[in-house]
Image (cartoon, rainbow, N blue to C red; front, side, top):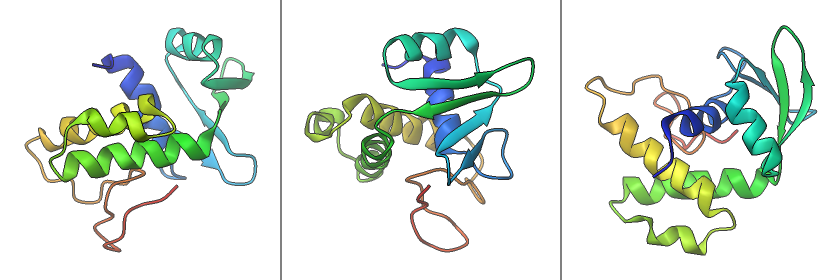
Length: 134
């Protein structure tokens, strides 16, 4: 099981839009926002993310191996939605991202309110009926 703070960091990256607390720049592939510095530092040390800039304002980071992370996160969401277990994580380029997507799907479906208007990579967009891709 992935800790809440770790899940929150990576999910905030997957939820990044121009209208959210964390933004994503398509041209530079950089995420900008206010993150838990302890978690960010840990995952910089582990090589999952790179620090681009950190000052008194927002922190800017890059997600290493972003394509693998995105596809594995979306696969985790899809498998959870299909009712499968996490054993499929072993077949993904990034089992960690798969597990975050899988756990996030279950976390979101436990909420009492409908996910109407919720935008996150790998989740179906209510407005378009398509799976949101970042």
